[in-house]
Image (cartoon, rainbow, N blue to C red; front, side, top):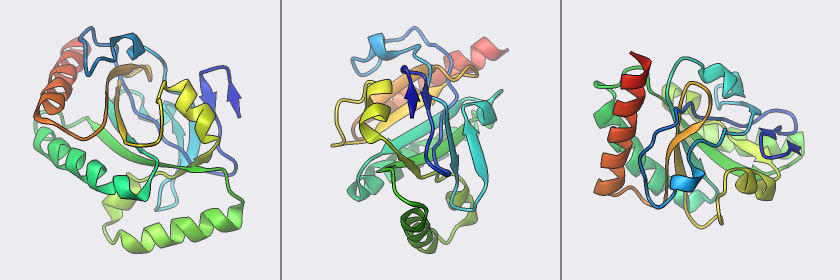
Length: 190
């Protein structure tokens, strides 16, 4: 359930959150959406580790890739390639994939998570994938996500606030914006 626009809890376990510092750059036309706090969620990654976000991300910037449809995986994968290129410059950056699914009973969640686990042989990739089973409309509303037609990438600061966001496919411009936002976060933490 949501409490205002700040908290999300998933039934049983699932959810994830990015760490972000408030940046003062306009990105993808979403300046008014920067600085909002990412909703608190509790979830398990596909390896079974329980996460409470953004609390478990404290002290590190985080990029959260929020997807609503199975067909969005290619968009997530494009962002992951960009992040791979950034890892040497930003070793503290944590990246999480957050597939969002409507709230389901425990048996259905187990079935879906088992299928996802089976399709992802890499343990590290399973560890960064946290399926959120929750009220999708309330979650989207809390993050000002208009619809489920594409993914939204969120860079969170140490306080769980959105420092940067981009909806839609990765572009060269969006990749540059992400790099600039990470540089601002890195500079603010030194």
